[in-house]
Length: 250
Image (cartoon, helix red, strand yellow):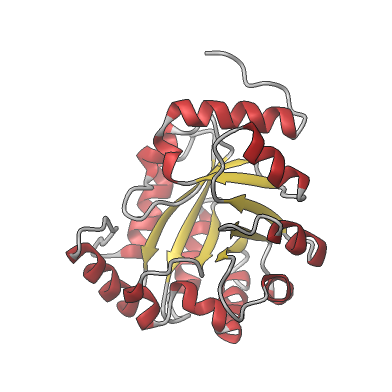
């Protein structure tokens, strides 16, 4: 899906085209966003901003996705966009922009802030599998490559079973925030044919090796994704653990 199998994970209000371009020397993919694309999720994002979190709140979120992806044309990185929505209605519009720009679409079933969960997006979708499957189905119908960002350790949610359902609905990948249950990556790998991206605590050789041993197809870096020292260290580990040619020295 992308090479090297190292992704930059979305950072609310920070992961834009400039951020992705800055990491292109190290990563094979960059997940821009997340961005709220419907009225409910945008209201929640405004509440988050009011308590000093960074959020993308352009007047037109679909046009914003298009502009950011256009800015990455010619950049040697696979772009992707993480989107939040409390309804499925804007999903096809976001999907078509990503499709036409050669980007992946990532549906956010991951964020756990109270404001987002209260309107029915983010982690709430993990507990509403019918609605999440419908999101995937509507996106996949456009021809975009679609996947879902999920979180482990959510009570009542069996990720391997959910991942099978998402695959049946048309998902091509799943991006797993493993929390403190790294072995969940192996469970999802064993249960599906999805491309599995492992996230959480990826900082060095040991953490990359652990996820590779569990069968991950790629790993992602979140908070340190703007730190070239960390990215260089993780990229070197990815090259070794996945058996790739080392990155040429600058």
